Amino acid sequence: MDLLRRLCEVDGVSGREDAVVELIRKDLEGFADEIKTDAMKNITAVKYGTRGENRPRIMLAGHIDEIGFIIYNIDENGFASVAPVGGWSASSIYGHTVRVHTRKGEVLTGVFCAPPALTPEAAAKAIKLDKLFIDFGMDGDAVKEKVSRGDWVSMDTIYTEMGDCLVAKAFDDRVGAYIIMEAFKKYSNPAIDVYCVGTSQEEVGLRGSTVAAQAIKPDIGIASDITGAGDTPGFPKTHRICNLGDGVAIKQQDASVICSPSLVDFIRDIAEENNIDHQMEILVRGGTDTSSMQKFGGNTHATCLSIPTRNGHSPVAIIHKHDVETAVELLVEFLNRAHLFNL
Image 1 (tube, rainbow, N blue to C red):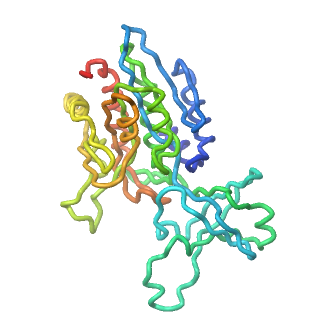
Image 2 (tube, one colour; image 1 turned 90 degrees about the vertical axis):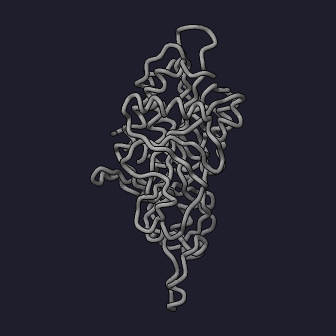
Image 3 (spheres, rainbow, N blue to C red; image 1 turned 30 degrees about the vertical axis):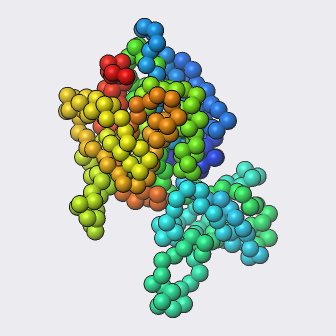
């Protein structure tokens, strides 16, 4: 999974996905008939089939942006406040190091800090994002010489193997990008056209996939993204979403989409016939590029292959290797049979 490591280590907050785009372009060269980008910084690798006319168009979507921050203000002492890009919990980032990407091309290290809690009552309150600031370890003049309002911030987390699991900052959604890229390279079916799309700005409103779906007009849309897990202490069993290590999760619905029942059943049958470990995902909140493909693809059957995740939307998300492996395996098997799906 070296590609997954490289995808997670590169920085690409929503709207600043350029480095991820170039990594994907280099990796998929030689596997695609065409690779193109658009103004939204979506990157699309296309492999055209050679058998028959009016071949089904399959869109694979894995968003390449990660949540981060933008510099909002710098005070006279050089401490910077930020605005979020995507959804964050302030308690998950307090004390973490960050990388600040400046307009001048420098990448600076900083640390998220907060004012001291001077009373027991203050200490008991949850930290709020607007109280956090970045400490650069420099005086105000030195910081203002290098950093400016509008510079962007990514988390500084080392990609780590932990038992059977992996820990990183950007599994949401570089793991989805990894899955669709690996399946794109491995499938063999001349009866379909496949559009492998690294979508942009998902974390701020499914923006890239909306543009891509309108352009491609896929017959079938398969997203790959993370989902929650409910297998940790304190999580009610009645609200369980998925378990790490039980295999890829096939989405049935979330707050933004009810997936195509016939497509879900088709993929589920493939998993069962091939003894691929899998679980069914029903999420009462959140959404993915599945929704935008369904809404804006024109006439699209859509679902998502999800990876159960602990600590989602934090600097240290946790996923299981087996879930990733089964996701790739299932997506390859689906692509090899996709022409048999009754549109």
